[in-house]
Length: 185
Image: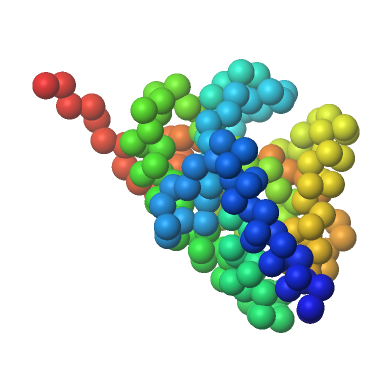
């Protein structure tokens, strides 16, 4: 427990530096997401609503504010209880994500949301679709970056695989917000 507390304290200290150099933006104080616009560089995927995600498409990349969540829920010993609380926080942040995207100056060219995770239980009920990256090098590199999160979250599952999470803009708006028609003045 003390090792985890020390690691989280160090992470909290270094997180502002990471934030500064990562080009991430906070949606607002109530959201667990930090986001940035990215050009997708992976293989082509077709989502269930027909949205095609292809190389060089613009996506809103989401990052959970992991150090905030882990420090907030560190004292919860039961893994299921901790997972439920994190899920609830993410669920409450989804309408904020939809609003952020609707109001973004580049909203028209952004096709959807992308996230990368090794802990992907429950994401389908949020509307996300899961796909595995094909590049072994990319999977290994990203999984290495996820190791501290796996250690600190005390996840007992050794079979978590790296997964792309995609959510089309249309499904995001349908589930969590309404895309208002443009008003010509």
